[in-house]
Length: 372
Image (cartoon, rainbow, N blue to C red):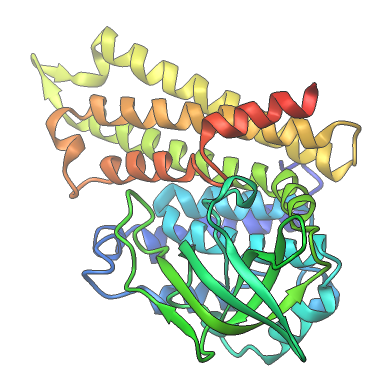
């Protein structure tokens, strides 16, 4: 993702790595206790002030306007230490890209301009759902000055901390999915307590119940599926970068542990079986790194078929991350399951983010369908 001439990306890489080491590594175990512990709001604000949420946002909307490589670099470094913040960053990017895919950038601009601070800037989105296979969907009814929504959206990521949400639904009498902007402080909006999740505990999801809540149509009626697919093609590689960061964090902790832990009179890293596990982990990481880098390159150069490259690469990297984090626990034996170390969290996070944009089997079948 970074060449010798990419001075801005190198600076971004160093900044994100240093931030993750200083702000995330030290509080990883405590932050993972949310919602049974405090939310790391101060860390979120620091990341916002460093423009980590603005990397691919166009300059016209107050962003930096860089390519997908910049977001992937940020997510990889952040997720080495704690993927929860990476999940927050990616969720917000998903919401933004849905606006752009829907040709509703002006509507997005009004929200961003009104926002003051990280939580006002954030937009919640159902990142772990594919609306085309989600049933039942929220139903939208036309009113004189807009729409009213009725129904339920399960596991709306950031719904408990963001000011607005983008929600898929079906307009009464219209075929196809549509997206709607909802002010989460509106009358008729009920937000549950944070949902207990497998991983990404500090990237909270909630269940949203809408009872005739006012909403604004994003884009055109019935075009939501195409907009969702366009967003997924672009941000699949960002999800893969999260998995890559988790893998790198797991490998580093595994190497550190095996160098310090002794058995049979020598460090366990000197045992051949252990070295083979670590070797396989290192090869998996390098392979994943090449996949993410190549997918970013194809996208930024607008090469023919870059969408398939991004989607297939992401599916593969997520699979490899789940296997590698399992090895990361095995290397450390019984303590690998303890929260004192980061391996069990990385294992949970890797499995959790594997379901971004829908469950893996459905993503694989959709990939085949697109080819055929």
